[in-house]
Amino acid sequence: MFSILITLPLFFKQVALASTFSIAAYDPDKKEWGVAVASKYLAVGSAVPWAKAGVGAIATQSFVNVTFGPDGLALLEKGKSAEETLKALIDADKDKELRQVGIVDAKGEVAHFTGAKCLAWAGAKSGKNYTCQGNLLTGKEVVEKMAEAFEETKGPLTWRLMAALEAGEKAGGDKRGKQSAAILVVREKAGPNGFGDRFIDLRVDDHENPIPELIRIVNKRLPKK
Image 1: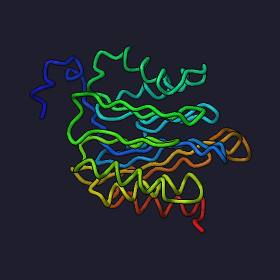
Image 2: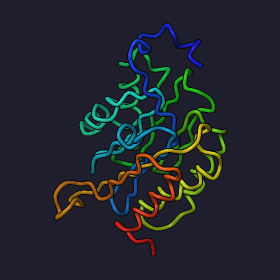
Image 3: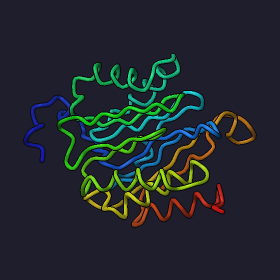
């Protein structure tokens, strides 16, 4: 699978291939932003999800460029839209065709990008206040089912994100298998004792069934009614 990429400078470094499926979304009622992600990749939560209350949420993946997280949030915080932020990030990256990104901004507007050299199947599906994206998937039905689950699920953003992850896995998920999953949900002053914005920040870094395990842990933090 490296034959078309071997001449790129990236391959003189250690390759981190965060092939995965994720969703970035916004809840306008609760003013929450979040990202949920799963992958056959060790500790995917350490690379893909980024969010800041009042600013937006970003999922950066494929041959992951983690600088898209903090740099993208900084642009969003300056008032850039999701589309403007995405364009700035991609235009500045010489290896952009290896990247995949999903962004939701402070107003719930979304943008996504899938580079031409992301490993198939790769693509995205977005709707009001959310964007689902994935690469090295079993097929497009993964993001389609994620979008459907998010739209149809009621209740807190946390559980709508988890419903999308479950649906993506049931539709086939990462074609390599399972290993890790994570969820990040932010809201103003929702951190411990009212400090910070990290309402939900939970990860399963290495597990045979990471999504069910993440659901078990999330239920301890925010019991599902």
